[in-house]
Length: 204
Image (cartoon, rainbow, N blue to C red; front, side, top):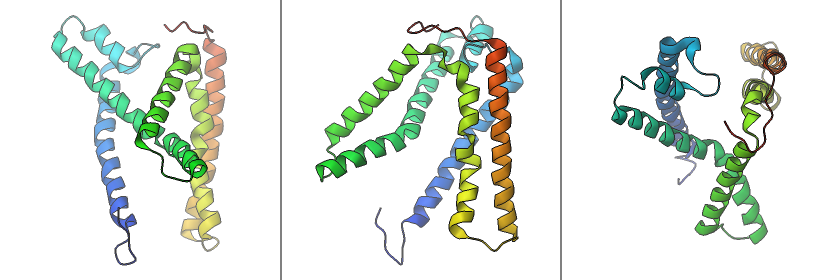
């Protein structure tokens, strides 16, 4: 996107990000709320909402509707993978660009993305019980979203001490750290309480 001092590209890009996240919120939050309202704790342990739909509505719902639901979930998964994998793609491409000292060709970008996808698939098949650690891993990763940005903002922007933004960011940062501790403790408890069935290359 072209950028200049009069018309910096960050303005329309920021608007695009806001609109994109607003659309994502419109899609995800109603689905999560309606799904929990419909099934609650009836969702199977080894699976999500899709197995619940087949378990509770497989007999009284047409195959076309079930196929459409599955197709939409596949599209959503593939799209989400591209979004969450973008930082890794960018990192790989930037390293190759620095090493080759020229732009990364399109065919090499395709190969890198396909190989990364196969790598993720291999890990999922090789370690199928990795989902049991989801809560623990998620708890460890919480500071990246809730704590570090606030503390980094204070370090970079250096707001006036004891000002509203200073207190707000410190409160959010400390809350994120406390939430991390609670989630990690809960994740460890769940792992110890439920146990883990270790089975390499044997997905259920």
